[in-house]
Image 1: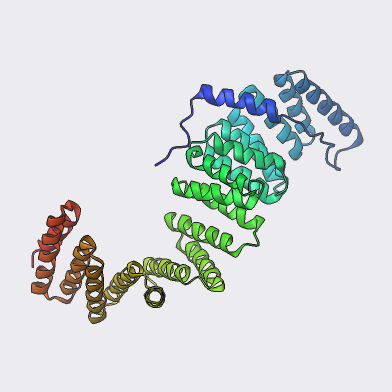
Image 2: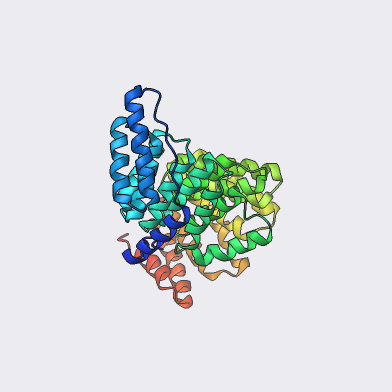
Length: 389
């Protein structure tokens, strides 16, 4: 699996200096309304001194002064954000991150806090989380050029850059490089492909909060989110996004998309043990696959139906589905799939107690697998066929 934490400490320090010099800016906090007049005057003086220290490059003093000001106004999210920036300049990335998170928690609707968080995570080499933070910030303020630039910069400097850089270049040609929804969706898909499922979910859900008038683009995000939640074994959430993906495919008249969505739903319901719903979904998948003459999808639907029928003890229908699949993959010329499907037929015979037929099927499975040189499939056939009957 792709690792996003493989930058050296030196590389991260150099990056921190670059980012801090490029984007360092402070926001003037005024203090909360609860501050008494005397405390407010002291608070404002501390803030003035801390910002002056930052301008002079004395970040240690700035951090100390921000800390003093926080003693007077401990829920001031702007102070935490400013102290995060100063700590970043010091190379104190973990502390900068904690301040950014505190600022975000104190004011979840403030985009700047997400920017601080993203920069700190980037400097820590936690690129998946950094991309998620920038995306969450854009969900709060899609017009933020700072957050958009941060997202693109973190993407290009991450191990995902080999896939993302040419995609960004293509988006620029298409004049989509300033669309937060499109950019975030692309990043989320890449995170999903890299196996960073938690970050992928955060990024893709941020894209949905921003929204798009394109049903097709939204459908692709729903599909990706269902895959990410499936990988995280969050089946209810996966099913919810699969249903939304299906609804969009129907509204677009996308028969192939409907077929795919029904297949995904059937697999998810089967994993949950919801066999009635799984049967319904895979039956729709089969009908739609035949409608669009997609033999591969039809074979997948038949084998899935066979597994569901086996699970509920309906062995005649299980046999019929797997045998029909055998005939279909023979016509396709897919010998490996034929061997596996014959093995599925054998598994049903075994469940029925027809051991002679089961052994015959697994012998055929083993013979084909050996001819194809597929050792794993041959081992599967031998393992099942060698049961003590």
